[in-house]
Structure formats: C-alpha cells, structure tokens
Length: 114
Image 1 (tube, rainbow, N blue to C red):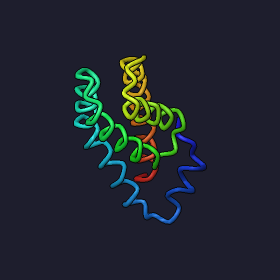
Image 2 (image 1 turned 180 degrees about the vertical axis):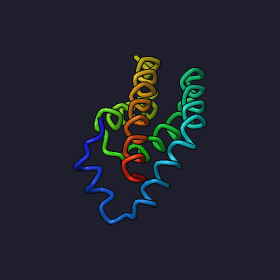
Image 3 (image 1 turned 90 degrees about the horizontal axis):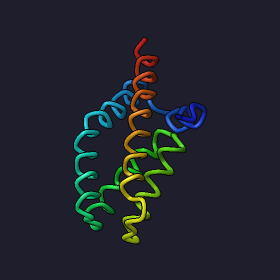
C-alpha cells in the first residue's frame, strides 16, 4: 500500500502531468520488466537478475509502497548473494504486490486527471 503522505512529499514539486508520465512509463515497462525477471529467476541467471531486480527496486522506491519496496530489495539482495532459498516465492510475492501497486497508481492517476 502506497504511503500517500510520503508519495505526495516525494512528488510535491512535480506538475501533475509529470507524475502521470512517470506512472505511465512504469505501466508501459511493467510487462517487459517482469518477463525478464521471471526468466532470470527460472534460469537462476543471477547476474541478470541482479541488474533487473536492482533496476526495479529503484523505480518502485519512487512510489513509496513499503511492502513492494521491501520485496524488491529482498530480491535484489538474493540475486547479489546468489541465494536460491525461497527465490520463486519471493518473485511471486513481488509480482502480486507490484500488481496491487499498479492498481493504486491507476487510482492516483485518475485523481490527478479529474
């Protein structure tokens, strides 16, 4: 769940149009990001998983969703240490949490455009 106060603080100096553009970029990149991450997890391709998980973590951090940020951080750390323990479940949890984040971002986007 997005911490709306922290989200608003993070984007306080941005025009609504810019916030919407940032959200839209995240939406447009979602499928490709998660396709790559899933392939990295399945193949246990830790160098690519590290790169893609770290990138996702940076993007998600902008939206102030502590659960999703933590899951992306944990996936990033697992990839760095090449720890396979619970990796599939961690990826599934991250994907579900990010799906919920996208619903919340869609609501914020609607609020900004109304």
